[in-house]
Length: 178
Length: 193
Image (cartoon, rainbow over all chains, first blue to last red; front, top):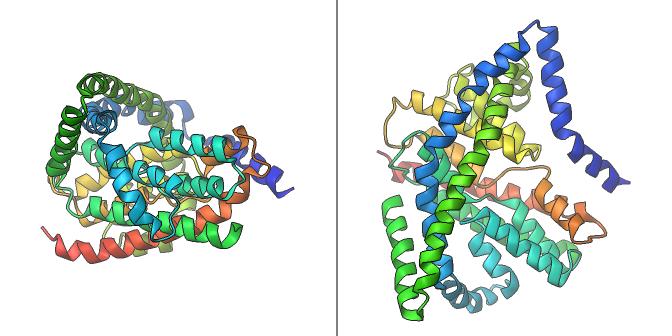
């Protein structure tokens, strides 16, 4: 029952949001299409400005993965993290999640397929995937778009928060689902 | 900082590739990654254009004030120095609402808009302001109530209960966001310009 309800809610979020925005603007006698177009105008320039930042960051991550450097890093880290009761299967996900959204989603999908979405590992991976964002992507894109070069403590904060999110995900899943 | 990290990522990759004999794979990865970056930017064009248009509509009609009312205590606490009715505040509110509702592709356009407005308050400096760092701290820990992508993926892989991870995700994301806000406040003083 709850499942059906949340499923339907998730489907309805965007259409309901659009409907509300449109009806409200119409009632307030805003020229809906003209206003939409004037706002939408900025979309192209902003996106295109991001290209150099995205190319730089994605190439670096691509080299790290293709060279095997990332796997090496993961294999060093796995035994250390095992000391803290962190299962080896989710370590690659924890490392990849801040770097690349699509790669992390791929790892999560692989864990869900091989271990089953309703296994403890499957639930852990799902929770980890959903609880933090792709820190490097967000920083690159957000700072890149406005030409910030000195990012101060932003990266440190993002990575510390990611770590906190992962530890929380593993602890909560161990507590609730075991 | 970013310069050093970028250098280390590239350098470590190239050294490992040389040692393991995967130089060809690296060359291939360079160009496929560059291509992926451009296609991401272009796929952003469509969502940016659409959501920035909707945002303008929400601002002009005054619907934005509803969001302001609901989230005001939170944003006043997080961004005490951003003027209440500044466009930066509107974009921050829209970004947070989109994140909370799990509308991932709307959050990025609103977030970029917020950064542009914060940059105006920052007098177009090339150094990040305190507000930008706080905004990114909240964004990188992805405060969400509905992790839509994961729910879809769980359903696709045959879960009997795709939404059962919503509770654990909210707890984990709240932990991440709390740690992000606290470390941001602490490190802010150490990295003062």
